Every structure is written in structure tokens, then in C-alpha cells.
Amino acid sequence: MNRSWDNILDKILPDNMLQAALARNDPATVELIWDRYAGDLLAYLQAVLCSRHDAEDVLQTVFVRIVRKRHRLAKARRLDAYVYKIARNEASSFISRRKRERKVKSLDESWLIVPKAHQELNELAEELQAVLARLPQQQREVIVMKIYRQKTFLEISRLLGLSPNTVASRYRYGMEKLRILLGNLIL
Amino acid sequence: MNDKDTQNEQLESILRRAHLPEPSPGLKTRITTEATKAWNQTSQEISWQIPVRRLIASAAAAVFVIWLANCSSDYALARWQSGDLPVAHQKPSDLDALPEISYSPLARHLVSASRKPSITDASALRSYAERMHLILNEAQQNGVSKPQAPVEGRSRLLPTQPGINSFS
Image 1 (tube, rainbow over the protein chains, first blue to last red):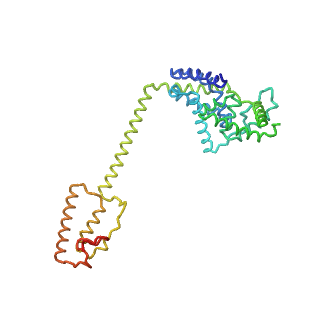
Image 2: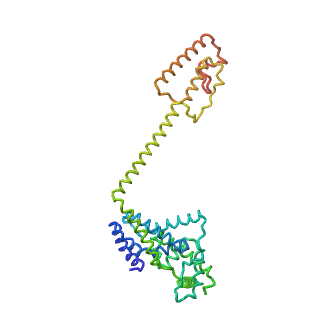
Image 3: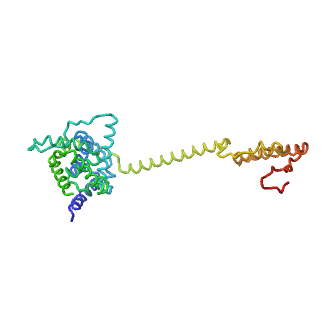
């Protein structure tokens, strides 16, 4: 069986179990949701907001929203898509609030890091971060989910409610721009 | 094409040299605490309250819609009863071309009456009939006392219509 389908089938069962736990109205479900979604959601929010601090704040709002909407989530056809939709909406309202209040996002904080053993790559991480920040948000979120969270186009398309072709073309356009912007690093 | 693929692979490997940090334990504690607090607050709402609240909201919306419909119908009715409905389409009248006809007051009244909205109120209808009767009487008296000779073979009753010569 295809690897992507394996991944999807692996994730269907935990979502069903999570939905059952949500339906039982058990507060311990918060931990389960955290273990299942926190890493992916934080990466997604960092890709959207280009700021670790803002992403953490929005992640908290997302979790509170998930808890408040748990009755709907328990009945949702696709739990992961619903969770990402909540995250997307919260990120969008955060961005519009930031624009309205004319707050400048802090550019000095690093949301891309390098392993401690390779501190010499710090400059590279900073350059990559700056270059990724120059991409359109839609292309950036696809690249981040594909490269840093090892998601397939099919998974990304299901999470973001897009067609796989749209996701693939966003990835391709983003990579083309990165190739131009990082021309000095490519042989 | 192969060149592009190689470049893409290179680019991916460059991007993979950095990575995104996992959520810290401190962040987990902060967020799960907040979420659990929100959970406990909302659990106090008993599950049957949700459909009841939805029912109340839809009932309120229905009442509002009915009230709005009532208001708009009252407004429309008030305008209609006062008779000041705007004339959407006004036919050009030949009132100025009728002075030589002895029944001109009647013709004027008929033309102006045709512009007004229809009368369905019984008292209004009665007064309208009385007024018509009065006007007809006046017209008849005028016609008897001051007969006017038809001009160039025109009929006294009707203005000449194009293409109809049978009255002459």
C-alpha cells in the first residue's frame, strides 16, 4: 500500500479515539489532543505568522477554542481538518488584529533552529528564515508542512481543504522562488 | 528537467539542515492548564442546555422576522390608505386638447380618477359615486344650456380618433 495512505490510515484511528474521548466529556482529552496536534499546529502557526512567540499565543487560543467546541469536534467528519480550520481562523484574526493595532512582528526571534551540535549553521537558519518570510503565506505553509513536518501533498490537501494539485503547485512555485532567493547556496 | 529536480533536492536538503522547534514542556503546561480551565467552565453547562439555547435563539429569530414583516406591512398599508402612492407610470393626457368639448369636466375627472389607485373602501366608493353623479348632472345641464356646434364635423361625444371616420 502507498506510504501516504498508510500514514492517513494510521491517523484515522487516533482521531476516532479522540472524538470518542471528546464525546465522553473527559478533561484528560486535552492532553491527548496536545500530544496529537501540538507539534503540527505550532509548526503551521509559525509558518503562517513567522514568529514563534505569536504562534505560541495563538496556539493557546486554538486549544481553548477546541475545548469550547468539543461537542462539535466530537461529531466532525474529519477531526484534523476541523482543528486546522480553527487554527487557520485564529491565525487570520490574529494577523488582522496585528494589522489593525499596527504592531510589528518581532523579526529578531528565531523560529527556525539548528541542532546544538551544528551551531555554525546558525547563520544559515537565519537566512532560511528570512527567505521563507519573503514567500507568500500560502506557499510558505505548504513548504513548511512538507519539509519540516514530513507531510505528503495528499495529507496537506486534506488538512487545508485544498486539492492535491493546488498544494503541489503552491509547493512548486514556492520552491522556484526559494531557488532564486537562495541561488548563492545552490551549486 | 533533471537539472531542476537536482536543484530542488539540493534546496530541500539545505532547508532540512534547520528545523522547527517542538513545543516546550513549559508551553504544554501553560496551554493545557488554560484549556482544562476552559473545559471545566464549559462542563458546568449541562448538555441539554445547548439544544434549549438553540431553540430559544431560533424562536427569538422567528419572532423578530414576524415583527419585521408586520412593521413593513403596516407601513405599506398606511401609505396605501393615505392614497399618496407614487405614480410609477403616468400616461400623457390630452387635457389641453379638450376645451371645446362640452363634457370636458367629466373627461378631466375620468382622466384624473384613472391615475388614482383603485378604491375598495365602501365609504370612499359611495362618495366617489356621489361625486360622479354630481359631475354628470352638471355636465348634462351645461350640455343642454350651452350646446356647442361640432367643429369640422367632429362628434360631440368623442374626440376624432385617427383612422375612425364612421362618426362623422
